[in-house]
Length: 97
Length: 416
Image (cartoon, rainbow over all chains, first blue to last red):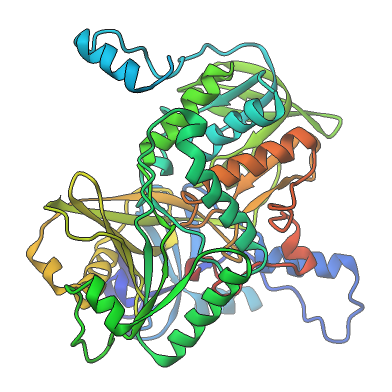
């Protein structure tokens, strides 16, 4: 499996380290909040539950043996085909606008 | 047909022309008391123990492919009960006891071979941690022996004792651990279940789980709808996909684990040996091939095949442990799908949906658990409540904080 890093080009997957599914969104901080069941449930879902699809999967990889950038890779979990690579930073900036 | 020395001699005299198929290839009926989804080791064992222990024989096992086509035929056949945590030891020891009586129980030769499992340690800290594990095992009545370097060297002279980076200091041995012929486990349980009236239905994919007023009433399959009093899911590797049919999201990721076999050689490796400075384990099959494996590839996958960096990593670990391996050729490598749970431990439990039961999350340790998993799952389904052996393996333990993290890795499935 080879991943095309946005900054370094095509590299072998062994240069990258895998974090996991990129879709769960970290809930708001627990500080200063009433910790009701709904808040606990959101954190539980974020930390533990995964859709685990067979097919396209958006996931976080870090190019640890290269530029150390975090990437969001869209990869087919049935075939290992890499469909798209984005810099996680760019997506985060776009989301915050 | 009962297997014995007499049936063997009788068949030999008749030129082996009278053997019967080991189990019935059944047609799907419209309704059952219990439907098990997944015809692998755990599903077949569940059906067998439902019939044997709980006298529930209106049971169907539905398998998408052919019987035993998943992980029961893809693992490295190791059995052991060398666990540390209080939730794990009684369960895996019960599994070991069931392995010890399995062949008599099934009247089927599963080639259970208690050849001993040796976990090597390479540092003082690792020795202390293994001593602690051994003590925990012995407190629970499980056999464990801490061996020093001299004792290991006398048993396994061919390992690399001059390795400067990973010196072998000794090992923790469980003599009752060993290997079992994996396919025979599937066939033996299939035969035992089939003889007791269980219908084993192959090439029957479950495409939906039908609920009425919040309770499961049956499953949609590629061969039509089947009404079921209770439905048990035992489809590790694809648990998330099947559970999603009932609207459940699981604390599980599917990952690929590769295993390897070398060309056949004369008897060399008498035990199961694990390398403590990396992740590598090796044993020898009765056919002569060295069977070995290591880490999962580490990314979500449903492909049943892995990538070369992991193969290289496993072979490097093997060379660090046993340099003579370099003279052998790898004959085959293959991959299987692992239900990697969020704490590295399995789930055998009821689900929030009435009449739906879940057996999942075996990570890469499901084979050794096959008998106890089936036994406990059958108990959970039949009594609608878990047995004390599987009571800790709850689905809601992540919400309540009762996680069972044997390896201490946290909610990062690819590190368990």
